Image (cartoon, rainbow, N blue to C red):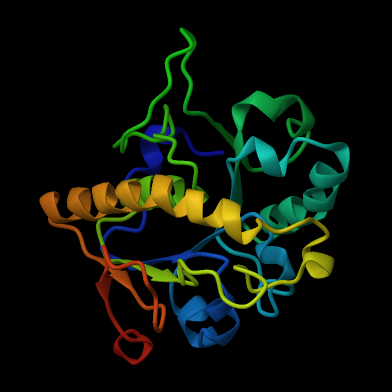
Amino acid sequence: MKEYSKLEGIYKDSPLVVVGNGPSLSDVPVELFEKYPTMACNSVYASGYFKDNTPDWYVIEGLGHLKTDEERKARMPYIKKVAKNNGATLVNRRVAQHFQHLKEVYFIDYINEKGQHYNSFQFNPFDFYGTGACVTYAMLQFAHFLTEGPVLLVGIDHSFKGKDWHFFTDEEAGFESMPIQEYQKFRMRVDPKFEEVAKVFEMTDRKLINLTPKSVAYMFTAGEYKEWI
């Protein structure tokens, strides 16, 4: 496994696709995933494309997604599949004992040995990353570290549509989705973090482009799939 320092800028100027779990993910042209490296999270294995095709980076940083044996075991086969396909998984260090036997797993955290929480964007996220109550905020720190090229966002609807805010149903993922009342509180926490990310990319002269159609993540520059395929 590569050392963290050797991972910085490994994709050079190549675009990196960061995959959210919004409802629009099901409509992303697969050519985008086939053309560029990808970073996806949590229950993405329930997606039509990612059921059979793994991302280059699979991220499960939230303890809430790993707190029970059932939830951990549900993700173990996919972590193994990611590694078999020459990808890697990022897992919260505080549950490392459950994943140390697996190949190509990087243990990450936002709390250092002194108990200090990192709450802002971190430029060396493999040391410690900033927490923002949203895995996308974490993924964008790792994406900024891994490539100097454009970071392309998909599945970042950032809205609650119908009865769900994910592309999958509760039954498909095997876990309950966030209720709409909690989602409203989630937006209040996450929007300022997304604004921070957008500012960091701008100040470091990096491109961060949201390809998600009709996304309400107003803080990100909007783009279209046809520009990148």
